[in-house]
Length: 525
Image (cartoon, rainbow, N blue to C red):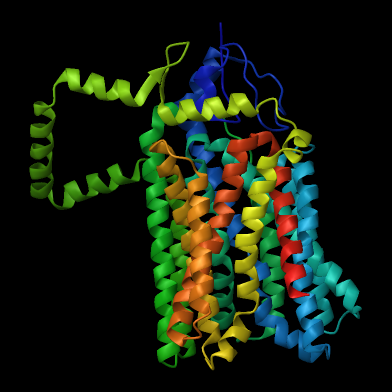
């Protein structure tokens, strides 16, 4: 007798034939997988859950090293002085990194040709080579032409695109019923990565640019190589542990918000007071400590229950009162009401397994997009509508961020660095909130693209706020542009996965990024 495991999308397991299932990657690349009952018992015994959450933790660490393209402002002035470039040349070198999206297209194709670890190792090598050329050129150990530096910058960014593609795809496969929340948490790490590396740079590297370049060259490459083999699809059964997944995601989200608020507080203090080196080191160590907690949080099973037990030990009288109230409420509820409520939110599949409404919707979407090919997607109107919306909205946001220094000078503001930090932190919040909020809308029976509409409206409001020319509104506008811009990069891959199926996400998502880079470059020109 045989049973099944769905490696691509856990929530559809109960809807397919009991003898076979399609998996979503070269570890079983769209091939039929058959497993015996004793193997399934081992998988459902808990090891797969730990492995799946270890994969999420590893992906979060990688994404925390993946947003270094936003740190160009840290060493752009050093580039200008060391290489005697004009301001125009310096800006062009900064814009060259956007061409790394071209390598993102290749990463989408490589994902289905090679195992995940292979794509990550390719990305690590590209990142190391690209940033190493910049490092050796700026330290005088290598003589490079302007165009060679531009190519190297694009190659380094392209390596990060390889890692980003693999992490997004694996998370979409491993957390089918929590797509938005999982991608939002992952992308929030990318939003904070620049702030974290800059904090380390200011606290421990004595504000020496060559040291910072060495840091961003070596550390991400090492992290990619060390964690590469943890990023892969893990078989699991989400039906049995929905509550556990909800608790873990809530705990991670809480700590991400705490870190964002902490960094906001640090920025305010640095803007008001003069902070010496020892206090900067304390802030940097605190930031890294919170990051460590965030990376460990997904590994805690049923964290809210764990904390509840801890409270019960510390405050037994409070726990007894809460337990008595809970039992009183439970006695008042009849068995018939429980059955009716359960039948409203759930249904039974052909083989008798209980599935939720969200899982039914996901299964229907998967069945409709299963036969869709890349060419069908490219020649359809849906992809181009998504591309237009994201390119115009996120492209406008990126253009604003690239020129925020000039906007600040135009209104005679001398706190441009604070604006950049606000954008980074609120970008993190936007990625996090849009993922959780879109999943919440899905549970309510609404469409996820509604969040895309909200993001467009927020970007429109941001442009109106910045047009006022007020310094106060500049602070508000920087927060809104970060919030809206960050939300696009959580919503885009999630919506593409639901509209076109997981098989098309890697290529279409990076193709969308390619069009966005051209939008920004054309706007600069």
